[in-house]
Length: 340
Image 1 (tube, rainbow, N blue to C red):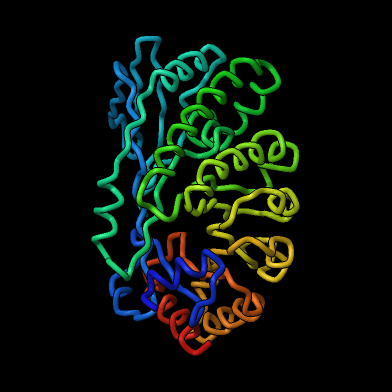
Image 2: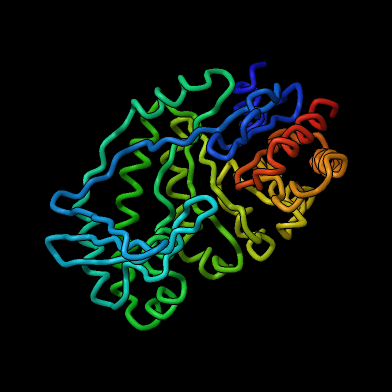
């Protein structure tokens, strides 16, 4: 089996010769390509989305501060972010949505958008690593997740769901229709793995919100993707015990970035019991990367033992690793998997 074949087979819950090992390419430290059993994961957008007449400009307004401006025919929205120095990621300080009237602007932007297939993105990504890489095709987040993560923040959205629900629901409905278009593109693409990059945690998407907004979304998207032979991989890297049973009722075939203890609160064994028909594509618990290689190897063997030889088990790395220990940790995981 090639590394790519091994990962795809495992995610389909088919037998493999050993437990697959993956790492997002953008997180891989120098020298990671020398780890023989490490398969790289590349992401690419399955479709392009543009809205005629809408432009976004960015301006540095101070040290580590960026102002973004969205000019539209229906009004203007702004977002203010801080840029951290470690990885260059942006942390939103003031979100796009600041008042109830802003939802109407955002809704029009989304409803007037045009979704275009981007088949070259998958083909180009496949060429990068050949049989040593798999491609996750990026789609939109579920509307609830997309709204609070990208536009409102959770506090603003929580108040507005109570105070101006019609404005919020209008945007969620527009996002849902756009997601349908994107998933239809994904279903007709060459890609095998379709990424639902939702960043789910039960601390926010508790049982009520999950059942109201997320479960119906996953059912509908799977109805589009599964008959086309695609594997929807939903990024659930948070605290999942509160929504364990709700996740079990969804048709999602792959829980991606599943994070076991000590960082998560649901073990591999518990997840395997709760979701016997789902593949677990792990995020190796980030705190363990900081430990000594012998302990990292031990934790890796413990995770494999918890999986109990079940089909559909992949150990992956989906979060940043401190540079000083990155290569050392990946090498230790690779050794443990080679000897399993």
